[in-house]
Length: 116
Length: 112
Image 1 (cartoon, rainbow over the protein chains, first blue to last red):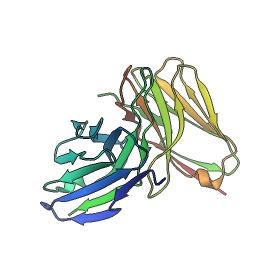
Image 2: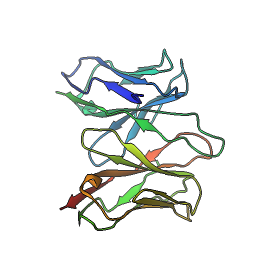
Image 3: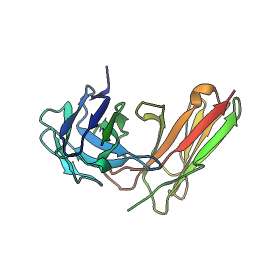
Image 4: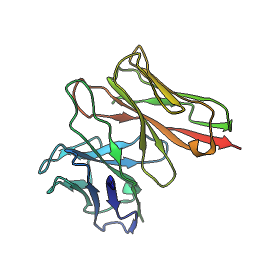
């Protein structure tokens, strides 16, 4: 099993350009997430999905859109990139949480995005 | 919003030494997770904790869920060079859900 796979690994955009990051998981997980990682800060949740066809906003959703058309894929879009979106983006997936305990997140290897 | 603090921010140790780091919060959490991140890779789950007072080991790693539910600790015994990396804690504050809060990480360097 590959686990969580992210493409591309690196990308450089000019301000105003758009792009889509792809995340694929082969663990049959219901939940998927997009996080961004910035120096000195903890991972921050951008958007998440609790199942195929559903999406929801996280802590820092502005400037991003997502889609979950298939259970195994979760796409993150930037419609008009800004320098503040320079970051490392991580996709994660998990099982549905239990009644009394959360399910650990399984992460991909990240996409390093630079917006100039 | 809720925040997690990790201490120390970074540490340099000699190979073979034991390591202790912690994660603290001003509010209660119901799940604690510890992750390790190597350069250029994603975080990898080390240990998951679900009950106050719980002590769980994974090889040379041992983590504890603090009794107050506001902290968690990670110990690494007999460190080796491949322990180098950033260690993150993550807490889940709700009775039900996946609303994880991540700490800023502890960067560990192991000197030969």
